[in-house]
Image (cartoon, rainbow over all chains, first blue to last red; front, side, top):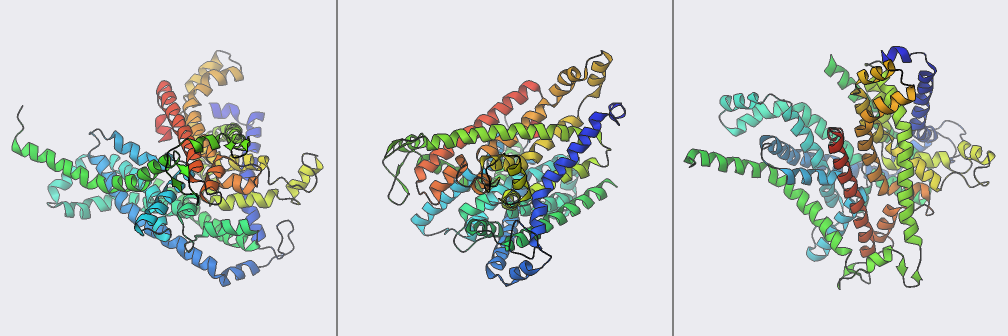
Length: 270
Length: 303
């Protein structure tokens, strides 16, 4: 009803226009970065011609290659650890959901609700002092992995938990009857049923890690710059079109991820 | 009643199971987040040492500094920063609501098969790194760019200044950054909208505005409030956007705190600022729970 009365009315036309304006607003900054990455001139104000020279420069820039490597190592290591720990806690939350686990819920939501900057500086202050006292945990990739795992655990746990809640509880009884040992139950029942949840939890963790800047920035050491940190310091030092090129590649990766998620959604519906 | 041995055994093994599954994660978060936060809060009550590291004795110096008391008497700098953070948060949240409300509504009126794609289109920009997005705005708003020239022609800014760095650029960056956080909960609220109420209002000859305020708006309120919390809390502690788009003139609390830990080297002052942020966060969460309970529902939108 509502739809029919609204169709072709001026309100609807205004809304449509507003929708397209908002889309332009959302994509304009990204489009500008992509556009200027192909700019021949070293200028952020003028387009002179098409060129790939900034991409060529990327390949020769060892710092960027190293930052790219660090980003990947950090994202993969932290996601794997978070997946293992988060899975366990998600299952624990499900299996014992009838107990009073309020404190656990608070603990799990803490990393999500804490402002990034507070999160980052607490860990930094902690790592610096811990290193001063014991000589361990020197700021670097290790401390960054620890920090990233800390903010990834809640997301993994919540995804795994909601997958379990969506299952028929009698499945667990059946699995108990079928497979004698807990290990067999995990291998033949839990892991297969959890597979979609595990995949999406891994990708979410991975994305969160690559996407993070503030927490990485404060827990990083001098040798462990990731791509966002490299871009940040390049911007601070003075903008070079190389940043546009590396940023364009990262935008491309996101666009690819968006396509994949779209295809996945379509398939699930069919 | 007496417990049979097997029953007691079951309880014990259940508890062991709980500990086995939950301990690694809980311990991780406690050791690497709860303890550091507690340490940070303690730092706020210590004195600033020679290298910016905190030391005893305990004092309230840092809070006095946060209020502007320094070697040279009182100066309003920090207070301005606090007020600016509040002001930016309120303005940006308001603007985000104004943009997100019609957008969320519009998406629900479109064909069902288009809606997931439209939502994805709104969300995808926020998947890119925050630094890159902000860098895009730096490119757009810098002096000499079309947008800056336009603003100059209209007399909004003085010549050759550009739209960035400025408070305006920070507000714009915040709105850009947080728009999806408002659209999603509002969309969820619109999706569940009970259209019977709207039709009843129309049948009773309510004018569109009245029908909206009495039949539509109250139903979307839980989603709206969830969105406000999702936007306002992180906006208040924002670091990247004011640092890049504000250029020193538009510092917010997040920058004040961060500076004390990197360049400024005054941990206690930074920690005092962080406590302020924590208080704001918990007030926001508490308020949302209260409102959510009173309105019924709404919580599932948030979590």
